[in-house]
Image 1 (tube, rainbow, N blue to C red):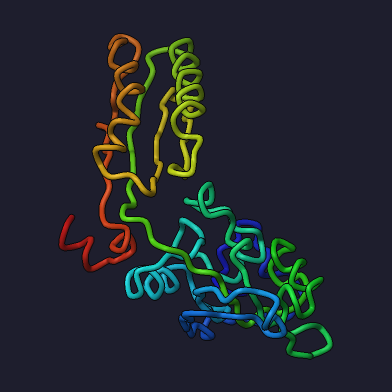
Image 2 (image 1 turned 180 degrees about the horizontal axis):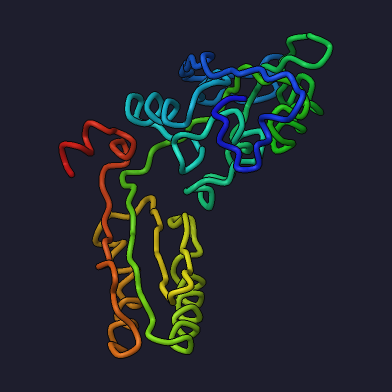
Length: 261
């Protein structure tokens, strides 16, 4: 168990032995990481080594806020790094950077025979393949992961809004329009996260963006909100649209956000 964030409770089971790794939370950055046994076979990569108990909030603080780079992880910062990577790890910006598991370069893992093993593309490659989505703890206790870091875009941003339809017919039309709009304007590396449909005919928009400034992001959404505004008898804005971007390096910087709230 790292963060224990699994909704299915996969880090625990009746009559089982629980190994809680939360206090193993060290983080180290590398300018040019090469996995064990990979010298001469793989090019060095900027990377971060994260112990199994660290949360994504810890990783983002070290990699983005302090070092000015990006590591692909989850959108929820209270999720454990190790559990997400071992489960595949589709995150807010995965349409551009891939899954969290795709960025895994190497792992240290204790297998059932008590051996401490290194797993990467060159050393124990089958084990390395298995932990990149095979499920947390399925093949052993992961104690450390090394993940590739990337150049940080200039901007991260967000879009939020709530639109309520006055009838079931109008709600179906709203859903159809949004799905078409998504396919045309949001199905690309810039956009991630989610929408939610409520029984009271409300469409909740809660999305994030990377690589777009506020003006560019607002231009993307303008056609959709113009369409909504054309039918005031069918739709009401329960929450006024908020569309904006800011410095990507400050996206997880709590102190900066408090000062600029």
